[in-house]
Image (cartoon, rainbow, N blue to C red):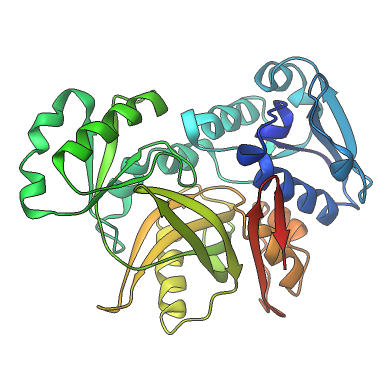
Length: 342
């Protein structure tokens, strides 16, 4: 099997470490996992990005591209049997790239475009799952209807706003008044091409994720992970995490995440589910689903009793691991332009 692997930021030559660091680290790990496969991966030829860490430590073949990623894929994807893409939901990039792969009859090692679209718009995800799993209440706010939500803050002293097509914590803000809401919406309008964003009820709790593998019919949880989030002037920032995260609600969180993934047709391969643990009330709420590799992958590949890269490929062909075991704990965090792994 001739396999193409690419990571969106690296393939487009983006050079902002704060935006590209996690993607680069995931790609490095994936190439090491797939060292014995016939793998090509993409790097941008005109980028000043240092690719030495990608090239060293694996036998995969780097392909330098000079056009943008979309143009290159449209012209060259037919030369491959399968493709594993690491791309963000932001601006529906993951959806459009998955469509290109599908439309050229190349095997997608991951979720199909319909599932990616459902998860790329966080309100679509909420609508699809709110009656099946506990989900944080979300309101779809059109920029033309801001005044209609003035009364919302009469009963809700704290809320959260976020882009409907955002990734990580980009644009996520805690607000405490209608005035904050208006200011945040102005910022939101610069972040999204959609005519709306999300207003969510605020619940104090522990931010976690669950990493799963799915073959499109059933899924298995790999781990429950702690997310380290901080807040600066109400803006949420993702600082790293710990894998695995052991908590009295971890098993329940994995069960809820599994039910969510199994409820969305077309989710395949690695999926990350973000959740919130409300310790005070013993409740768990889903925040969103990520139909792609997420940062805990860099820890999981070191801890699991099997090669996670291989397992992702096998899951796309229907096979899931029989046994999941984790040996140890990994903590990771950002330090300027580095991702420190302990």
